[in-house]
Image 1 (cartoon, rainbow, N blue to C red):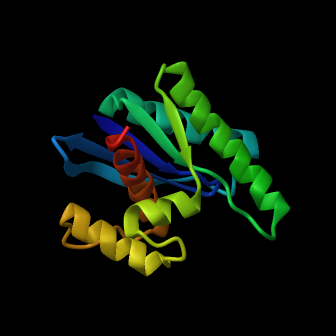
Image 2 (cartoon, one colour):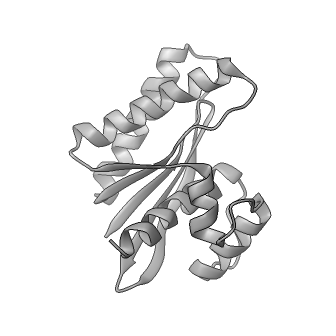
Length: 158
């Protein structure tokens, strides 16, 4: 199974492609889509959509796993991220790829076994599980890997 994990955002969208075969997890690729503040919002959303479509065509994932939104303070940011999340889900839906959503709590529990884990704990577990020499520099990318792993762990037992 190939999973495209996504950490949605407006300025940055983390993505990771995880291959799962016989309970062996291997990262195929990962990165971060960054949109420019110098272009209109609709163009930034179109850019996110186009780039996710490129990943889908290139890696042919069986599943798109995406993190649900969690915001406590800035409603304006939440709306923008929600719009980006919508175009990402649309990209998967139009390519007939099942889309699964996971809350930050579900991701932390799946990866670390602890719902109050901080980013460094999640990172250490990802590094250990995937036997990585080092983690990606951007948190958005690390979060996308965590979302992909969450799907792999969650669906493994169903």
